[in-house]
Length: 434
Image (cartoon, rainbow, N blue to C red; front, side, top):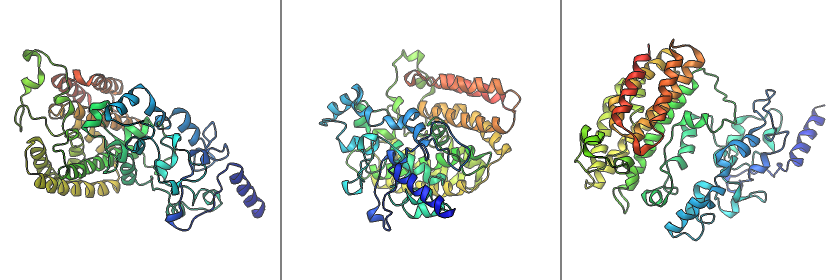
């Protein structure tokens, strides 16, 4: 019986076109393309199933509902074509700079015969080259850890999961959405792990059954994105163009002009910086500081002091580049250590409520940092509220839901964002929390 079952597994893999020769070394690992996962008996089913540890409709979810599957085709829409023209690129669907995030642009010797660049952002962008573990991972008794040894990326680890997302949703030395690219028409980048996972849409079962997993995901994601932003600042400060304007608050400059009497920015003033200097974008810090204040108060002082130094250095525009790099590197290391610590923590109901209340009560401070900071706070509050509602009731759930929706509405047109109105809405939300 065991031999028959083994033969059936092997035949199924062959029929799906998935059974490639397993490799023993990283040098021979290849990318096989999402089609190699598309068999109805594997990940290409129409409906999710509860019989196995996977849903078995992962490919179908990706190809029908996930925007990542359209990443390559989006390169040649009117906006993509115009960006390429402005950037002086012959064609966006052949330009390495565009393909770095809109496809899986790996070297030719890492592409299996089933690989197709036009598939866009597919399975192996996140899960790693599949050739070595693709066939064997369907066999009885196969362990996840064995696949990791053969090239599978460990997305179960929230730090690593965040890092993988941020390679494109924030950038690396090889993948960079800078001010030049944004000026050509590319959207600015932002990220919040739990929110992004929720709308992806999810095509996986979380192995971690902790009811407060989403809270930990939000916390870890905030830590990792701050770490990566600061690493980017350190790199850029040693490069050719400084400051790189993507590190500044975009809407400090890019907002609708109004009469002076109607300007909330001018009424607020410009604390901590020279009027006219765009401020360092603190959106990746405004939520994280509340997480750390609750999770590890002893780390707050060093974190706050370091961020103030980086803020001052980047916002000053003519500061010492070397010093900025050193300060950013130092704080990035602290954020990285805190990310690991948060990844090992267990969150609970009281802590989730404390975070909700703490962030909502900081409406003035968050709104002062502009639209991107307000956006991060709103996504975090949404994630925390959903997590809490799944495990308990706050009493005024409908009113709280409406309050958070109202915050999202204020972000619909970033150019029209008004800090005073957002702070007032946060104050109202705060009053609804017990």
